[in-house]
Image 1: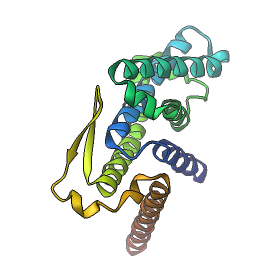
Image 2: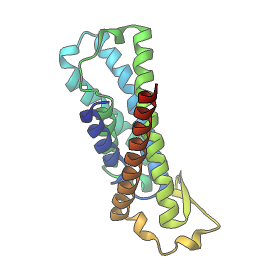
Image 3: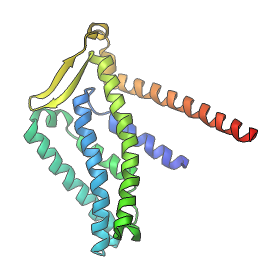
Length: 211
């Protein structure tokens, strides 16, 4: 993976998780939209190619992604006005992250016009989406436990909170539920990931030298 792509991935992941309130319920709603756009984006690409509108693909893709995001936000508003109000512009941030991570601004490939090409594109996009979704979900999961000693799920009233037996341990840990706490937690996670990646790369080079 190139340094440029790695930088885009890290920035997109931080944009996806940091502005969202420190509740798992909010994270679930945002991640559902993220994956919906990733999946629908490939279908949009196929439609653009079949209609021979490749020259206008950037404008059309942005328009379709925005329409899908607005439609999804309206559905969430009908389901839970509280969640829609709390998340606010995070819907559009998630849409932008999905757009950037999957390079939807690039020229549609001719292979997207075939069923096999569509399948390969969907597989590739959803593989990246799975990595980001799992990473973001774990972040929201750990952040809510540390910040509130509880876990929450989306509900029409806003969210259902499941208080953990050891919630009293984190009674004074609201720092992790705040934006500065999220930045600190993300920094620790990135540092740990970089350390593990460095160790694995070093081990692979050592094994290659031995062989």
